[in-house]
Length: 65
Image 1 (cartoon, helix red, strand yellow):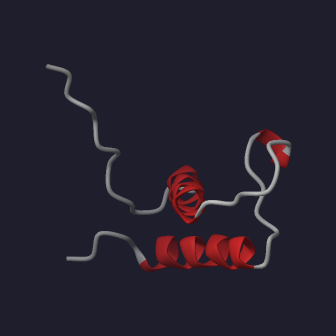
Image 2 (cartoon, rainbow, N blue to C red):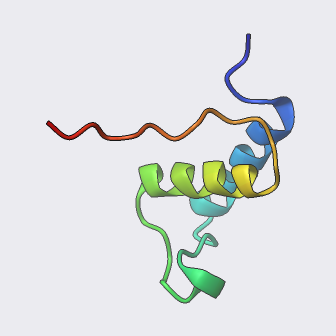
């Protein structure tokens, strides 16, 4: 069973392409500046896929002790 749907994988791939070429911006409307972290780029891709209603795993919740 795949964790991500094919469309979700394509969305993340598209975002990573933008990141690689220095076109990916963070924040609302891209006003946060250019993304410099690979992890942040992946998080943005997953977030955009989730907003589009594509199949992605649920967010992990932190357990406080």
